[in-house]
Image 1 (tube, rainbow, N blue to C red):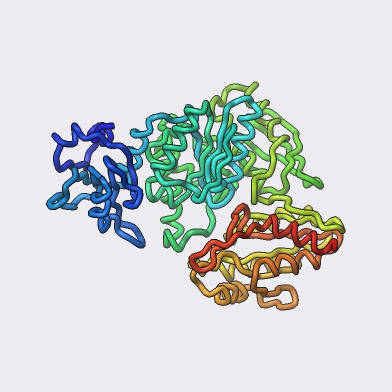
Image 2: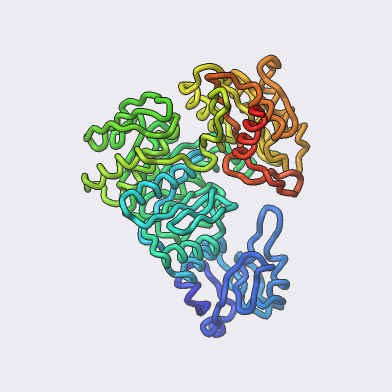
Length: 495
């Protein structure tokens, strides 16, 4: 594609040589100089750890013929067309969208601190039950008909994102649900995507090591509604969230239609729920119509995720009552998502073992509260906190675990480059009751110890890593899977 076609008509863009740019054929895009090939455009962004502008000469040596950078970069001494922009990250995302061209017909996006992975996967499952070729994309990866590809980021970089979406469209996918992370939106990775509906699950403390304040964290989330989704799109928001008023105000400012869900909702109202051994009974009121169903998932938060997905599915045509009925009863067939309150194993004495991704104070509290009604005897939890991340939440999570669980083992999560002993010590500051809480180095040993102590009627949840297939120690990723470790621990007690 010609460079000027990629740039398009936009304010704030400067091109060092328009005549050359008009003839220059771009063969690829990347923000990583190591991936540059002949004819590529290299995006040189300043970042938290490195500055892409320091790698311009390396990119040119590898064959870059165009450079995208922040305004102010001089083209002197650069033997490539230099494109500068007031917001180069956003421009790069739009370039990626133009370069790959094809997009799935119906795209919905979900943001929130917790629940994104479950919600997008539930959207896919509901659509598939309605005979749509559907896909989900996010932390767990890409799941679509004939495709199950692991992912590494909640929101991929723009080139990866748009290339994958073009691949899905070419494969016949018509409906796509995608996770929208706060970092992804802050870095404009999702810009250029045509989003017809957007969901908001909740907002609680997380990622403050990146955003700094809750206000900035919210502002990043709010971009999905204030700037990114279509002007005639529909916002699906959690009426039970403390931030519902702020999100609704953002939507009202743009004139977006809102569908709310939850106990306090008027559109998709959860009238009543009752825990069942393998799930929960729910009574819903959907735009005035009453429905009763059994959701095969435990916990109030999973009910909320399912209702958010329901809202995003019916947002395609909110007036189609027949479609609404099909979507509602599709909830009875939902399957849990990998690492999201996943039933991992059963102890020989009948005790249930779950694995969950909860790694924030609210996530841990919500998950433990969700499991309590399904616990006949004692509720156990094994968890840790990530190294090189928000230290303030560690004692908070320790206090929550001590307050809501009957037995707690504080262990290692992903220590990264931080001392694992120091991370655990921070958590232990919030849980002084040493009769109830045990500190244990080594996540594998902690899981085995917890499983060995289970009695009939107990429930154990291993929290923090969920679907992850590795543990980050230093700068290495060591193979580790909580579900596998739980199953192995059960095998040991049966010997």
